[in-house]
Image (cartoon, rainbow, N blue to C red; front, side):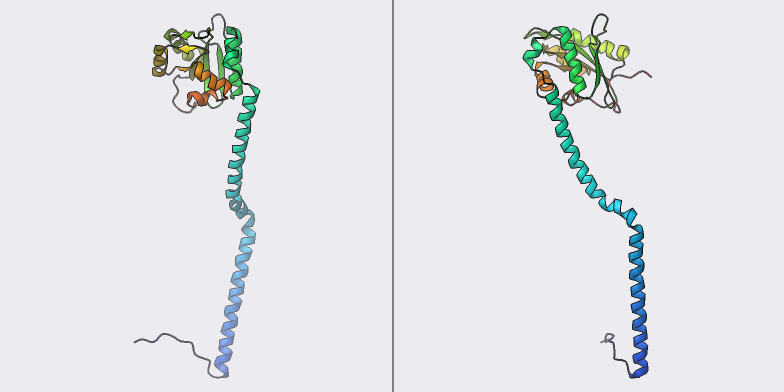
Length: 225
């Protein structure tokens, strides 16, 4: 069987001196290696520091963003909260202005445009991410219903006349089953009494409530150049 290597003690003063020189050389090289490594780390520290702290910064940013979002949602709801009873007591004009205010609350730049020759647009809103929205407001008596004809009108003018990405019919009443079915089939969004309560009273943002696509995705309407 092969025997493993074993260190032996130096024989004589000459071998002892040689061993001491080798040990000293190894020690010097080790010290130099450590010194160079430390120097490299010190020189690179300004560049490594952002990388080392990146994970911590990302975690803090996510936590801060969540807190800010909760506060923003709370402030938004506190700023504007409309009940169904208040909607029912409004006239048509006031109803349109309040819908514009709700869009502003949700981050849109909105204005009321309803009136003679409005081409099925009572409110128009613009959003940096979501594009343009056209709202056709239908204020009814309590229990009133909105039919499919309103859907046809919005579909025909929202894109060609207003260059809109989204069209929505909003009522404080109800929509007929045919109107809702036609709107779902032809991408005309609708807000009935129940959705209006979730939007205006409970504080849900309209684009989240209706799941509106962003402008970067394929829109229902083609915007003119």
